[in-house]
Image 1 (cartoon, rainbow, N blue to C red):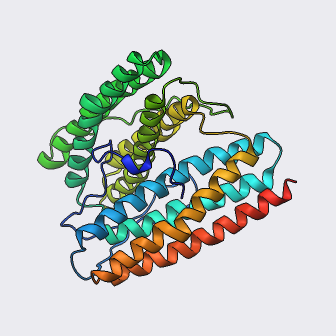
Image 2 (cartoon, rainbow, N blue to C red):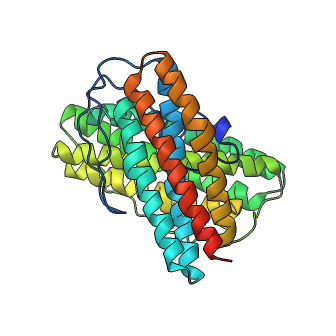
Image 3 (spheres, helix red, strand yellow):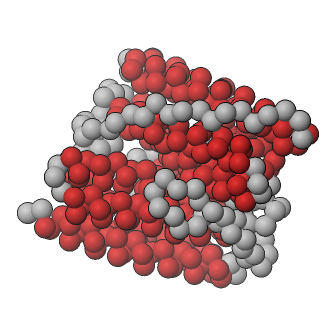
Length: 326
């Protein structure tokens, strides 16, 4: 996973929210190829988790979702530079971050509930983004002279309003048994080339980073919700989740990544990944593990320790790839 920029200031209430604990049995992502629907499986962690453990799982989910999105873009850049082996490494690591690490955190936290609960969770997040976060980011960017970012933030705010309307309509259909689930939106896919940031203000760059973390998490969680909808036989709702998830990743995250200068040369991307994986392996996840163990959340502590070990292996693999470039 990659923790960078304003990750520590990630706002609870983004379009997918931080991890919400449901009264329903916890669900998880199942390992799947890129682009495939993610299948939830039941998990019972044996009792409620401590608030700090839940907060750490929320942080982990956000970081893992972001890593999946960023590494996928790094893979595309490696391919463009004629480095297919590095592209393959980034893609395989991205899949581990999403389909193993995020899956396990979601399982422990009980992220997925009923279809109605999932829609309600998404409605809360989309309302915040549509009414508060993105309009605020747009106003700040405009004040700082970052007109392109202001325009993008305003466009995304409008998109989130449409997502909000779709989810409200779907919730009515799910809870009353009448009405229809809206058709899924189609993403206007944005290509993200390597380049420097296209904004002038540090505040705009911070807001872009916050937004990217939120959009990446939204994508991951909406795919979780889609898998649950399919499991319960609601194909139309599953398609709505999947279409919205693709907008969040392929359009919103990607558009923000262009302005933020997220993708650089493959050498720089590898160095960024190495630094992030090292921090997680040596500081972030070991700290989470100690905190979970101290309050008796043994399954979570084990997850954090295992993930730290995985991130150390990722760091080593990225370092080998970097060394081979020279």
